[in-house]
Image (cartoon, rainbow, N blue to C red; front, side, top):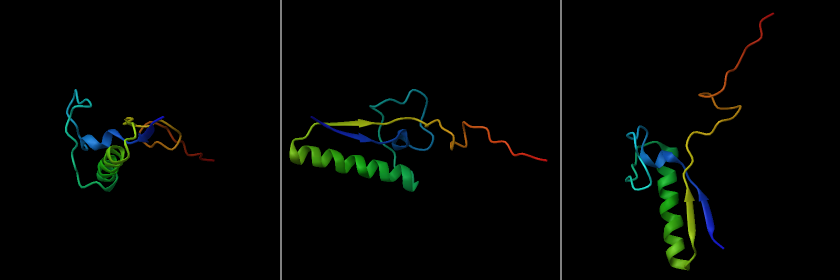
Length: 79
């Protein structure tokens, strides 16, 4: 068994360079969301070492869905 932590690509900074992969250094940006993900990853890894628990950290990119302002179209009805 292992612990799976859902993080974010936000850990690479607000504008990571093209070609960024898992080896890229995490970038504190001053953005509360992004910085909290970095701090959370550090806590997860620390606990993993302390308790000898295997960990997987997933860093999904932008999430697509109905509330996504970037990827969805909203229409307003006019009568």
